[in-house]
Amino acid sequence: MTDTEKSSKKKKMVNITINLPEIYDENIKKLIGMKICASRSEAIRTALRDFLHNEYKNLKLLGFFRETS
Image (tube, rainbow, N blue to C red; front, top):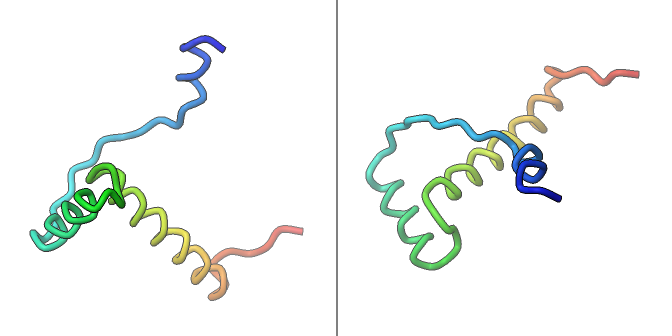
């Protein structure tokens, strides 16, 4: 597989800017120091993915999404 083929299969990332309370950043830095996360970006992606996964389940339970037959 060529590098071009590999890069075309990677999911595209977008840059966003967010403001966080200092305590969040301090705790993310602790997670990085403990080698739980590799970077701030990874920590935030993981937290957001988990949040969206849980919210999707909750919204589905509340009937926001209908099952297709």
